[in-house]
Length: 193
Image (tube, rainbow, N blue to C red; front, side, top):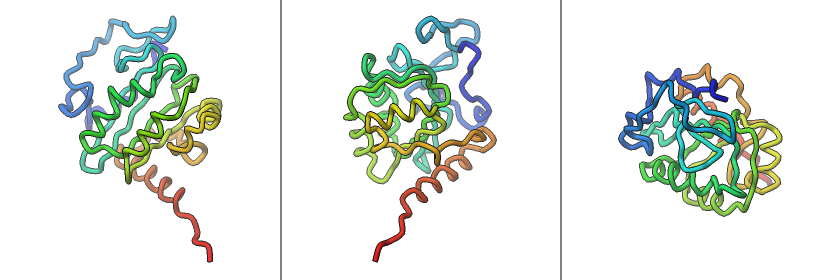
């Protein structure tokens, strides 16, 4: 896991540690010192710690005009023991929401497992977004099954419609537009007579 870096090809467009509105503003990173780990596996030092023992994040892009953030995750999402959603919401998401962000794309291809507790923080997050939305992009099928078993898919959009192996080929605004179209299509239901 130490070789898996957060996506970095958008760094010419956005760097969370240089964004004064970011929860990670002025954070300094080492390229050589590995301090974070998931269990016995060291993580690349570019991942950000938000208070979880097993889950780490990287805000790879934020657009305050279009009100969206793209966040990449790595590790094990554990609400049962670590209450990861609470920590993520309090330490990262609410700060972004306070800056007007109401559309979230969370990339989960490096999330290995999910352990559920209750869905209260997901419901609260969803309710606070009003016209916004939450998309879980590229989570593994077994993780999506766990989300579904815990009813978290009542509050986030995920599944087959939100699998895009080629997301890295887009610029952030293009990826957002693609996701936004999928969200709109999901809610574009035919009217019944």
